[in-house]
Image (tube, rainbow, N blue to C red; front, side):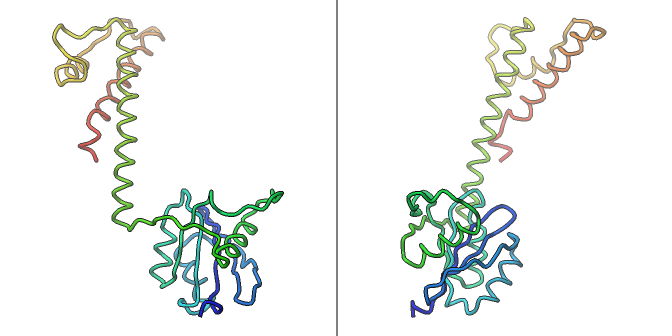
Length: 211
């Protein structure tokens, strides 16, 4: 029966989880803070009672859906809710982990929260792969810009007919030598920048193959 269900509000952070429970009799109370570790979550659920009498929720955020999957493995019905749609009282500006957890538990019991779609682990792994490739492409673009600007400042021009970022272009870059004396600070800096830019480009030249 719904009136016998206990509703858990979890304020999830990278290292800790603030926990609150909304009891069937109307009481909402804080249960303190636990480490954000699978073993700590397991002990909490075991302490609170039968899994079929518990419902849990927490706000979507940078910690992802690991807590959701851990609770699901323990047989707990959990929802990840949209943080921007959590009701806020006018004038309520005091924000702490304990108060946030209590508010989540209270609002979850009253049905005032909006759940978001939670991907399965396979879908989330695919999303992580896409994010990683996008980040690698951005790094590749930055490495291109650094190298091209350095070559421009150094007066280096590729041979006629060699297009930028093709294999012949990269071979040409790898064979570049600078005549400025390495005995001077400016000459050493030029050499170091050349090596750094060339190495960065070689690392980021084919991010799609690395991923």
